[in-house]
Length: 150
Length: 51
Image (cartoon, rainbow over the protein chains, first blue to last red):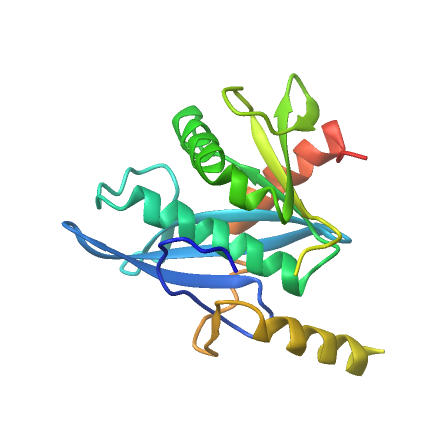
């Protein structure tokens, strides 16, 4: 379990669908995350704000709930937990906008020391995956569990 | 085989911070995730996965 300041999150028996609440100046914003299976052991991680009134999920708006760090830590923890339950899974993360990709990059960089002990992280650059390096701009990310992950 | 898989999964679940709540819906068919999965599938088809 990653030792991060994060929100509590809930999931169902499939361990593919997750929900948590962001709490801040804008009130309570429900966040939805899902691991969608693309092919055997390859999953896409999608994540956004839930608008219950319109049954919409949006990953382009900026929530402005003054809790970006906590939300990113929660997302990191969800992916970490998922890889415990699905140890052979490869998780692909694409950002919805360049700014969002950049935000993920900063988040991964910030927690890289802790994350990299248990998870291999790759960044996509010029259509090639490479081991994640700080201060490098990537187009997408991929995570998989290290063999000795507890 | 499924019984063994379920036992392994149940054991792994205990090591997570997630709380199981059956009120969490299956979002598989939600258009947002369908769209995201389609995009990621195209990406993986194009660039593959690391060795």
